[in-house]
Picture 1 (spheres, one colour):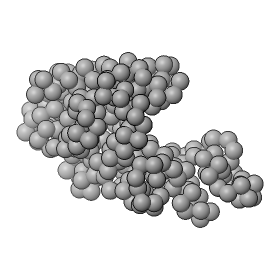
Picture 2: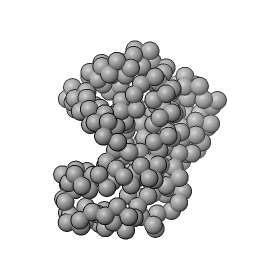
Picture 3: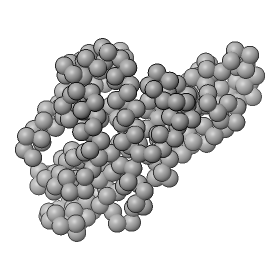
Length: 267
């Protein structure tokens, strides 16, 4: 669940109650206005988590005393954002803008496993030619020339485990991982020791998933330059492909950058 300025209803009222209980008093009226946003910002700063004024999974988990501590430990932090900005030589507001628009709401499932999406057509391409036809015939949901077969959530882990029984490294390479959905087959280009090492790093925290994103940006000089120059159109084109225009990723990042810049100036 993601709650932000302008939202209304019982989930907002529950958020306001949790904020008040944590010492950030706000009227429990079910309306996420500026005062609720400020309370969220103050709580995020105190908790050390990603400061954006939006109550996403990490913020809601940190507010909920029943949340397992491991989930909070794995959440993206301001320190992670600061480190990423330093490594890439860009403003924190730029990293936050990209994270807001290009990442998933959370890098982990409630089970504590990383969010993944298994791509059966990638598995097909990465298997040895002699293994493709047999596996597509017997396991078409796992090995196929066509994309598809998605189950979402924990269902993707069931698919991955079955694919690992065919070939573990290839299965890991055929899934996208974490907050930024970095494909596993990039492991070598991004400087990881092996596909399995990449797999374990993606399990550690959203900060480690952010590090994979940083490595991905640094591996592409043109993409890195676009981010440094805050050329959102060029960045979105290179990061998302031709579909960026239809989804207005460049406009969304430009607006997100301005919002995060304003929040930083007001801090």
